[in-house]
Every structure is written in structure tokens, then in C-alpha cells.
Length: 221
Image (cartoon, rainbow, N blue to C red; front, side, top):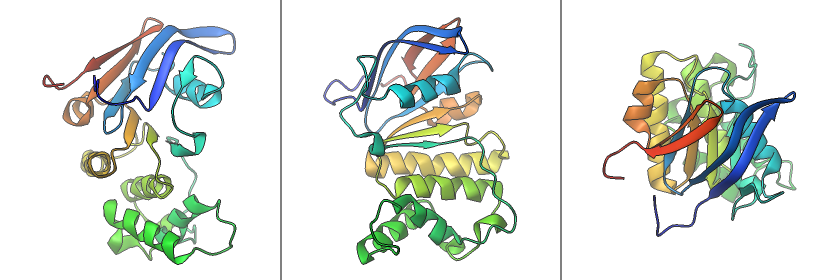
């Protein structure tokens, strides 16, 4: 692990259950800045429920501790219902990530932050395009950009590539890895795709048999 860094998230002896059914027992792991941790396992083992448990218990007890605020952790769900005629442009949709602003419009500084993430996620050519007209892969990059505009320390992607074709998957993960490199954001990425895990992951948190094991993917880690 990154011994010289403070973990952005520490999970200690966490139990995960849904509707009274135990999914994961006594799970402990740490997430460090500037790393991409893949969360893997078969359907039904509790990957998404684990993330929801972390979100619900964040800094509320000894099981989920972090030196960051809840607002510095952004979660991107697997599915969003965006109609083809959804009118907001890519730029305006990304700006919604700054909705905590007290003004009904973006300040000059906030507009600069939106522009920065548009460039970081390679959305310049789509900036004025209505989100509903974007492809699935493009929409996933827009969701990523909206999460990034708040400058998170931890980003959680819940199977963001599940409905994408092969090319779109690699385009999205190329962007994610560049974000990690540029911003030192920590990323947790739920996925079933072993190729993406091997290609992009730094760590693999594998959930199986009601337990989780975190292992470095790259040998030099």
C-alpha cells in the first residue's frame, strides 16, 4: 500500500446486509489517494450494497472513517433515465454539480471549473449539445464531469461501463485514469469486466463468500 499517504477511506470490521440477509462479514480495507480500486465479484455478492452501506455510515461510526467531508465523496450510479429530448446542454448539466452555490447562476470562477472538467473529460466538442442527444458513452463522461466539478477526493463509479460497447469502455476508463493522475482523486470502480480490471486497476477488492480481499493488481505495487 501507499504507506506514506493517509487513506482517503478506511473501512473497519464492516458488516453488510440487505433485508436481514447477511452479504459481507467483518470487511476491512483502505482506499488511498491517486489510486483506482476495482470492486469485483459475482452478481448478488453485495458490491452495490457495500457502497450504499459506506455512504450511509460515512463518518457516523468506527466502521467507516475518512478524513474528508461527505461532500468530497461523489457517487455515480449505474443508471440514469435521460430522455432523448432532455434539453439541458452538456455544459449546463455539468454545472448542476455546483448547485450548492447561493446564486442562481454560475460565478466566473465556477464557469472556469466547469470548463476545466469539460477539457479534462474530452467533452469540448459536445459542450453545447443537449445531453439527450449524446451517446451512452458520452453521457457517462458527462456524469463523470458533473461529479468532478465539485473537486471530490473520492469518486465511486457503480458499473459505469456496464451498458457500453468495448470502445466506449476504454475511452471512459482512459479519462478516469487521467483524472486520477491529474487530480490525485481516489476512485472505486464496481465492474464485472476482468480486462478493465487488469488494464486500469491498481487494486482489486474482490467480494466472495461473504468476505472481501484487497490485492494489488500491478506487481510493482
